[in-house]
Length: 216
Image (cartoon, rainbow, N blue to C red):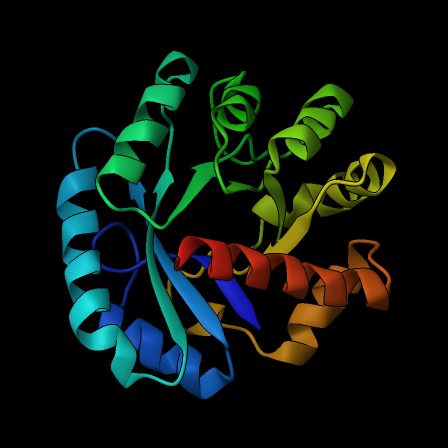
């Protein structure tokens, strides 16, 4: 299992990075990325702290640990700039908080994030055909999420991803210990969204590809 979308106390998560990583390690995860919610006001502080942890402590765990950000509620006109700033600041993985059906995310966020070339577009809600086609071109992975609420449109995302050949990844969007679900429930949610078993296995390969690319 690989989770490219998790939160620590540096945004709205319950765990410090060490406990988050240790719990993921014990739960059987192969890789985890800490991607705290970020905008211009807090990105550098949270990312600096997570990077410090990853560089000094990450190699002590039997799990690949990456530092990233989840750009959240950024005005679409500023998304490209913020993606660039995040990468310059050392983010190994850039996730965008997509147009989930349960939050007032600004229309145009999905498109701007894809155009900016984020690594993962999280819970993209009722993403359009045109946006999914562009995600294929830009090599942006679309998220199937195990998190309640955000997961309402998983089936729609799967259907359009299959139609256009977009890459999918499965993430927990973990904020608390209970969110680091096991393999069985993770697979059930993915299959329930309409993935075949082979497609589910491919999501893990897609996530591992991102890990390997971002750790270089």
